[in-house]
Each structure stands twice: as C-alpha cells, then as structure tokens.
Length: 236
Image 1 (cartoon, helix red, strand yellow):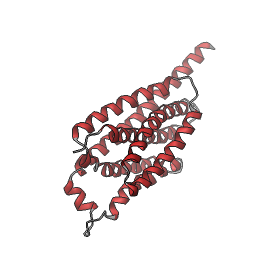
Image 2: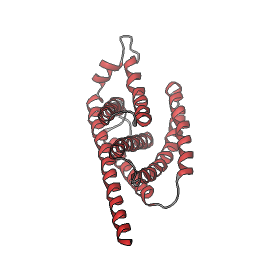
Image 3: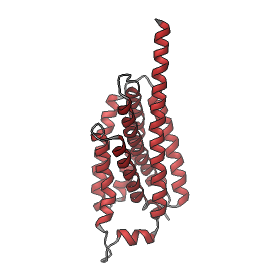
Image 4: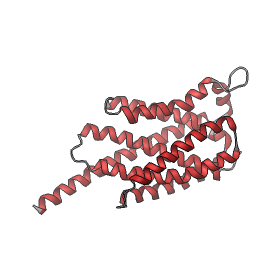
C-alpha cells in the first residue's frame, strides 16, 4: 500500500512539474514577444506615425492598443473552458503583441540602462516571491483577496491619473503596486500549485490552464516591473 502511495505521489509531482514547465514557458515566450515588439515600436517615429493624429493629439488607435489587452486578458481567463487550445494560443499571442505595442512608450520615457536594471530587479523579486508562494504551507487565500481588491483600487486610480497627470499620485500608486504585485506573485503561485496537483483534471484542461497561468504570471510580472520602473527609472 505504501508503495502505491509513493508511486502515486511521484506521478502527481511529475505532472505538477510538467504543468509549471508549461506555465513558465508561456510566460517567458510572452515576455520575449512583448519585449521585441516594444523595442521595435519604442521610437519617436513609430509613435508619431501610428499614435498621433493630424491635429497633434493622441489617435484612437493608441487607446485601442492600451485597453485591448485588458479585454483579451479577461476573455482568456473567463472563457478558457469554452475556447479551443488553438484559439487560446492565438489570443495569448495577440495579447503579447498588443502589450508589446503599449509598452513601446517605455523606451521613449526611460533610459535603456534603467529599463534593463529594473527588469533584473523585478525578475529577482518575482522569482523570490514565486518560490515563497510555491513552498509555503501558510494559506494565502485571505491575503490574496485583500491584495486583489487593492489591485482593483490602484488600477482605477491609474486610469483616473491618465487625465489628472499627477506625479504624486503616480508615485503613490507605484509604491503600493510594488507591495501588491509581489504579494500577488506568491498568492498566484500557491493557487497554481494547488490546481496542478488535481489528479482528476483532464490533460486538455491542464494544457489550457497552463496558458491561463502563464498569462496571470505575465501580467503580475509586468505590473511589478512598471511599478518599480516608475520609482527607480531615470528618464531620458
């Protein structure tokens, strides 16, 4: 009997490891796509050509690029069970491209050196909290719920600040964001670990959830990176 239990535990751990390999592969692939697109689009010539209208104002296309990823992210997370695996991958790729276009403006504002330094700082903080979330025995559900509500709050505040253009509010949002997104990293990792250990989940559902998991971790990382960049970044 103990032999059977050990074999079952080993099989479950292997499935869990395979699931996280897929999750991280999707996350890294999305970051690579977004990074390449952002670098390509992060020039004054590109911005003026596509995002500035004839009157010198912001073109509607810019707002589409900024807000479309939000809709796609919600569609992937809420509709993954109804969508095919191919459709999910296509939407995820489109999401990564649009995020890259929206992040291109970062290269117009901050120096390349500060972007690189902030990226590695963000990666270190993300990795540390991911390991904590995966290994801790403490239930992070309550903390995750509070952090998610805080995320909604700073998201709304960020939208309002687009029109207010308050540097003080932007700094406060960024500082809160660093704590929120580092905490959410640990919370989401614990949630993903719990899901990965569900032996009754079908292979197809597991593959779809790997995409959703990659998306969630990607969004968390990008938000952490942007929060830190607003605090640490030096402007061109």
